[in-house]
Image (cartoon, rainbow, N blue to C red; front, side):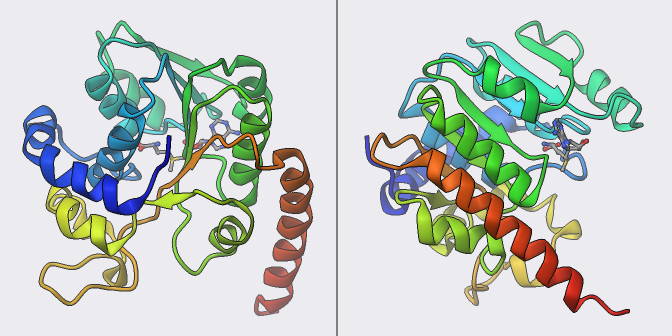
Length: 247
Ligand SMILES: C[S@@+](CC[C@H](N)C(=O)[O-])C[C@H]1O[C@@H](n2cnc3c(N)ncnc32)[C@H](O)[C@@H]1O
């Protein structure tokens, strides 16, 4: 199964109206994955017919609610690290009565490598940065998930450069080709988005939104070796940004 931006964008054009109907009336919850990004996830995931969706990082449950609406027939397992956060009550209320959604607490970096099964799709939206990327690579190294999505991999950041250099086949929700079709879904999210990451007319930015990476499992990719590389690159990145910080 190949994934490319052109064919996902073609699917987006065909399915946009149906998708809009499915999410009609769902309000956007701050800190959440964008509607267009969830559309991207849905279009990629429908090609692999997932058995379950695992989520790392629930917060106020925007992505969790969308997952439960978009994949009503399969289990959704959602992990959140912080049981003491005020977000917990918001997520619980939003997800009340959704029987196929299993709301768990714990550190996904410890739980998911043992939990992930053949045919699962995984969404990582916390931990962030290289920790999230390393979790994705560790899961792919098990050979079990069909697809792993990593949020906040926008153009210009170190994690995106790492993916561009080392992970063949990765595609991204922030492509302008996809955004020209899908951005209409996000009209209620734009207030909180950086101005250089959204657009209304034809003058497109370099990239759109926060950047959701789709990493299809590829047996030819040496994920264990990449895990080591990501550990080194993450260490160097932390130290270079610490050195750049004002004293
Ligand atoms: C940006 S928020 C998630 C937003 C959510 N996906 C949505 O669309 O509404 C990130 C969340 O990840 C959680 N998180 C961070 N590290 C984690 C870990 N190791 N395991 C599980 N959750 C984690 C944080 O506590 C925070 O609630």
